[in-house]
Image (tube, rainbow, N blue to C red; front, side, top):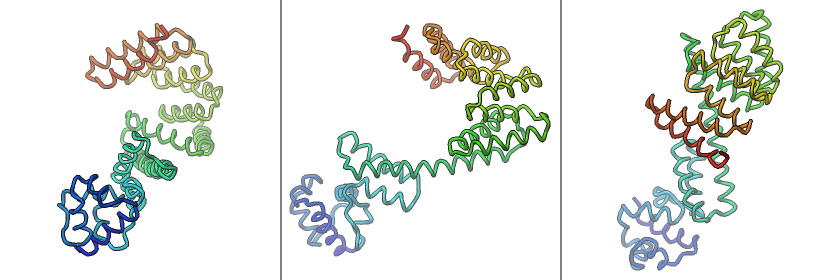
Length: 308
């Protein structure tokens, strides 16, 4: 550890910030004489104080002992620069936490606002790649294509591809697959094709494909749920409710149909019915040990209390 480099940085960082020795001393809860001794190279601060000094000057602890280190406007900006190099999510969260502190106190400059947006953009791309990688990993295990994790991975990957503007390409691929198989698809493949038409807002086509699929697999609750969803998007709420109820009779996974029925009643202005369904969902979740999900359902109920 170089005392000379440290002392020079202490002087340079303080000058760059426009701080007096007295101001630094006050911020660090030490005497101005202690700050002076650090800058003269006579002593080094207690090692436990180094993180506070680094944050005050907008640098990392390592920067205090490096030549040519730059004092950033604030500590969050320095963490942002670190994240840009490392691409480590942990560095993103450290940076975000610092910016959150500044947001609460209203201290963000225009640069900070841009930088805060930038780190989220960079993290978004990281998350995109990670999500697709792990959805593909789940789909690579095709020992049981009827398993819920497999089906959800396929559905969520499809949703992401649509959000990235690749929906038309994917839809054409799925339709070609159905045409080539002359309709001899398994339940999962029918479901994905229906979802694709829904996401493309081609509801009439989605309804036609869903009706054909249900002729082949009349007891598939996901297909019934899909048909209800299509009618929901077409604003035919009574018809949607009947199909959601049909899915419930067959047996859904996680009160899926009840959430959708509650949404339909909200659209119809029947808030009391929607409220009661959310309470029912909460009760079911709690009995099954899903307390977090139960609280979420109660939260939905609370949101419409004033409309009862």
